[in-house]
Length: 199
Image 1 (cartoon, rainbow, N blue to C red):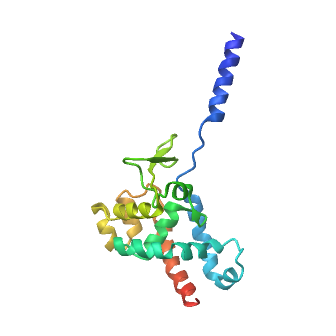
Image 2: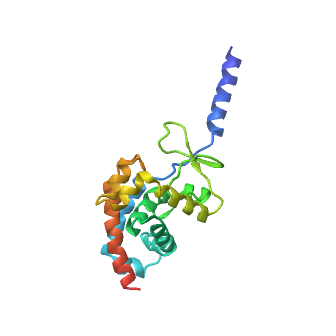
Image 3: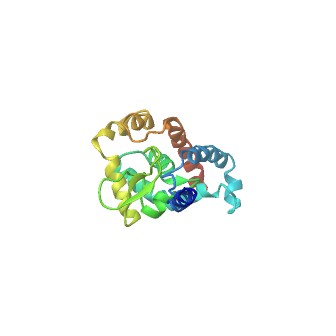
């Protein structure tokens, strides 16, 4: 009996150790922290620009690396550029860098899986990882996100005075972060004006 329990314990421990470790699809807490650090960037534009290794430099990196993509998605969906930026940060970034979902699966916007290849990451599926769509290229991921944003149920949000609240009510995201997303939209406008005015 002791030998049986010993073997069983080893098997259970082995399963726990060898069980795949899935990352969260995105990190809402990091995104909210990003909003706070973004305020610092706006207040200290010269400081951050003059010190490339500053910890807030990633805000500039997001603008430089993804600016054209944000403009493209905005043009294809009729959502404002500040809206696209805000949702890119909340759905696809972690501290200003691409989330693993975006980096490894080319999934922009945290699109759930429906067919084809999928990528496992934690989100709102309880104790098990969710299936997210996986794309071969970032361009494919961008086009898929555009298709999602152009679904009829989000059409009214494009003209709404509170687009982030509208998107939450329409079921785009389950996290109650519409206020932070809206605030980040305003910060985008301020930062965009200052940053591009000085370059």
